[in-house]
Image 1 (spheres, rainbow, N blue to C red):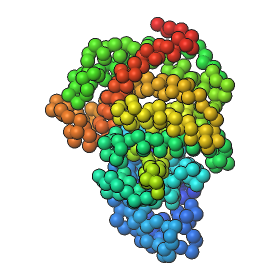
Image 2: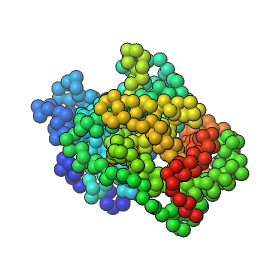
Image 3: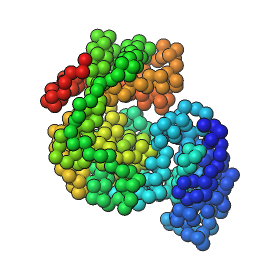
Image 4: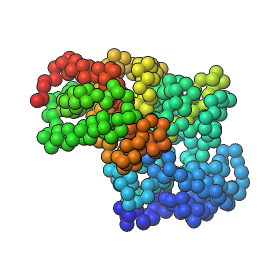
Length: 459
């Protein structure tokens, strides 16, 4: 990986070499920026970048490195931003680069979106100045306007003023704790999905992001094979130890009870046998038009992948960021990718309203009308699947906050938990997925769903 990523091959879309670190941006300097901005069309041929300064690298989220820098132009114009933002790949040599750039292929969809789709989506996104990626090296660069975020802790805003950059799984920072913000996000998701159905995005969007084949029915499917079942059991045991022993002090008592966790594991292994059937159901199987429930919209619209401002009525408006896992898939999954960032308390009270915000926006903007009860069933299945997926992330938490450190972490606001992104993100998901599993009695729901569909036992 290190050897491959050390090469500076031309990009796949503009055919020119590009910087993929902060230092390379500075070294290749105004001359390269001018050529790149001419290529992308954002800078007229009679204009040029004349200076670059104040380049600062930082880490934010888990998708890659970031930096900001300031430029000067030969001729200023109101449509040219001087403060710019660049997204860059993880440094080679670590597991983050391998998983994000190779295994998960997060980088190309974001480049494709910014080059081809950003002007056709029905909401604000940061203006793209240049983006490209090399399949041969996995290097990429994305340069956009840098947003003018308000200062942290600010709670009152003028119309149009961009609010602070809110962190994922820190919803206590949101002025209302979350409901207005997730509702705005769900409306935006529904609107883009409707634009996709109405063919109002790029003319070749189906080539860039092809729809999967329709799933008309749920076929007979096998359960987990013996090896996968054994691995799933071991991962569940890891999570149980983490919640009930290693980090017990920070979790609510309702989910640290050994009897509850033992029963949860038994149920989890049964649920895991039906993930294929759940995917078919989420894809619209057994409905008249399965593709009504499948489409293209942002798949990971967590709070930190959005920016917010108020309109003249003091209502929350939203713009969207970070398109790294963009693809066509079950629309309920896109909603889940957004609202799973909300707190347990907010989801208990507002989850149905979030689902309605998506469905009504989808329909109002030209998408089909969704069966609301079925859409809620889909949401419940995704909440159930959440418990299956989080069990793989204990090792990631312990990578950033060691087991020894947990011995004296007694509070959720301990900096070793809340200020370490990977620790906070996964530990929050452990807590909330288990809480909702218990509070919504999701195993009973799963059994009824299986019975209603006539799915046979597998063990």
